[in-house]
Each structure stands twice: as C-alpha cells, then as structure tokens.
Figure: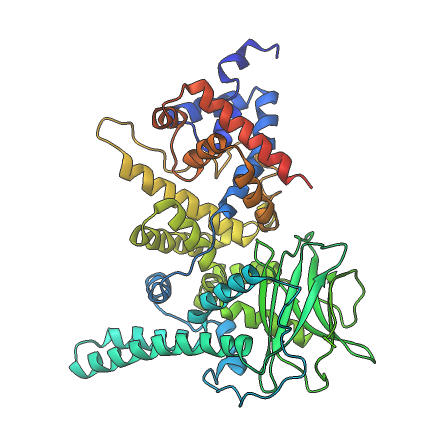
Length: 294
Length: 203
C-alpha cells in the first residue's frame, strides 16, 4: 500500500472483525476506516465471517422455568404461545400407549443401509431435547407462575409442588410419546436417500398403525432465501404434501407429520425444493427419495 | 428445536397455507413492536435454544447465561420497532445481541480496578461506518453447518485465537498474554484463520 497513514493499522481489520481490539484501539481504527479504502474492504470481507460465528455455538435447552421468568418480567404476563396452542392436536394425548405389538411387514431391516447409529443417536437427542417444550408443559408453567403469585397460603404451596411434579411427568410423557413411535416394536419406516443434489442428506420416516409419523432428516444443504424443503407422499394419483421442513442450521430437521386419511402407507416419499410457502404439487428438484422396503 | 416449532412446521405444510419461518419471524417481531406479549413468547419459543446455547458457550455458567437470556429478550422487546429485516434474520439479531450482552458481562467480570472501563457496545456488533456495514447479513443460519465444519478444520492455534477473541472477548494483547505469543503472531493467526473461514464459506 502507498498510504503511509495506513501503516500503523496494517492487519488490524481482521482483529477489528474478530472483536479483538481494545476500546482505544477500536476507536482509533474506526477513525482510520473513514480514510482507508483498503481497511474498509478487508473489514467488509471479514465481518460476515465473524457474524456467522454466532451460529458456531450448539443450541441448548434452557431451563423450563426461565421462560416464565423472562416473559413475566418483561411483559407482566406469560402467554401460552400460539405455536404451542396449535400443537394441541398432536400432543393432547401424550400418554396414548402404543398398540399391542403386531407383526410388521415393513419392519426395520435388521441391517439398515441408511442412517447409521450416529444418526439415531442424534435423532434421539433431538427428540429428548424437544420433550420439555410441548404446549402442555407450557400451560402448566403458566399455572405455576399464577400460583407463585398467591404463595401466601399453604394450600397454594402444596398445589404448586404437585404442579411442578406434573410438569416433570408431562415433559417425560411427551418425550415418551415420540420415542414410542420411533422405537415401538410395530414401527414401520421408510428411509429416504439423498439424491445427487444432496448426496449427504438422509432421512427416515417412522410411524405405526395408530400414530402420527415422526420424520427425521439430516445433512440437508442450506437453501437460498425464498426456497423451502417440502415433503411429499407420492401416491399413484398425485403427490400429497406432507409438510414443509425448516432445517436447523446444521441441516437437520425433525417433524411430526399427521398422516392424512387419504394416504395409505407405506408409500413412496420425497423431498423437493419449492418456493417459500410450499406448493400444492411438486415443481422443484427432488433432493431425497425413499421407497417402501419390499 | 422445540417440539412446538416441529409441530408448527408440520401444520403449516399440511394446511398448505404456509409462511416461511423467516417471514413468520418478521411478522412476529412486528407484533412485538406493537406491544403484543404473545409475540414475544413466540419469538422466545422459536429461538431460546440458540440464544441459550450461545450464552452458555460464552458465559460457561448457567446462572449468568440465564441473565443474558433475560437481557436479550428485554432488549428485543424494547427495540423491536428498530429491527430491520434487511440487515439480517431475527435469529441473527437475537444472537448478535446475546453475544454482545455476554461479552459485556464477561469483560466487566474480568475488569480489574487498574484496567480501563470497557465499552458498552462491541465493535463486532454495530459498525458505525455504513460503507462497512452494508453486507452484514450476508452469512446467515444457512452457513452454520459449513461454519462449524470449517472451524474444526482450522489449525488449532488459529481456532483458539479466534475463539478467545470472539467467545471470550479478549483483546489482541490479552490473547497474546494468554497464549504467551508475540502480538504479531496473534494477529496473523486471527487473520489467516478468518480468511480460511471465509474461503470455506464461499458458495
């Protein structure tokens, strides 16, 4: 570079982007930015990288009680979120026991070629993590907060303890309900295999005679803004939309899919990429495809 | 991922009437700006795991991480009117606030009587120069997979230097002290590491 004014700041743009400058250094560098195109260019190139670092930390379950505390303190109220209310149809019978084990024609192959043990470990962790998040637990949380407000009476304290125990049981029951589908002896499954556009993707749909379908996917490549993954039951007449997938940043997604009456399983399943919002009939490339085991 | 969001995704898809999660997020923040407590709850439920994960990564302490969560959502509630979707996703907005809050907290914990007062805002978060800031949101959640992979691919000394800066809020001088390396080495490690990450993240 020719500008002697730049010399003392050489290499500082990366430290600036990484947040590694002291207060004084930062102020002085920002002043320099106003006159140095080179440093602006380097900071511009590196800032998106450091911005992306916020995604480097793995997501974690927060303590359930934190929700009520945070929301109460900020807004003075702890709503059951619409998301959770909308979940009621699938989760209001979390303890529905699996039916008697039946001999299954499309049971898990004993030596699956698809997702391996690590995939299942990951999937079960996702499910376990999801356990405490259901609407029912949220509703109980809300009641706890209300009760905490009337803690003056012994009766309320007793009821509070009972509720807290119920929360623990409900969280566990929700988790069990999902795991019951996934690990049940009569579980049937379809493995979906990544197509050339997503060679590392894999997915598995699991259901039994009485349950909704649990759908687990991993290795989904990131999509450009405006595109979305859509899951289909590919029936002889026409494909039927099953769900939209919103993968986690690591490319994994877990869904509970309601199986429509019109869909007779096992059926071929596919994931295509479609415009945001999804489409009534598939138009995009197939990223994953799975056919029932013979 | 919360089961709530899982179910939401399934319902949205099945009903055929659907909103892309980001559009939904933007609309929810709009409702927050109008003072709707349910919208805050919704944003909390959608993003708490990422925010808490980042807070724990930086604070390494559950109590402090919970404080960060409280502050992030308070700030989001107070500043919802100022959220600008063109600068990034709601997730990025929340995570950036979480990182700033957490680093501030860490630095003030670390501050000794003989050290200078620490800045309230961190340089990484808000670039005052619009010329520099224009492309802030280029990398988003979609890049997270490559990012994590790329981080693990970095030579360890480079990764450590970057992590000390970004997740522990250390300055170049403090990093040099911690690693017992000359300042120039620290500078080079961070710069080379960031350039490699950038390369790995190129489409």
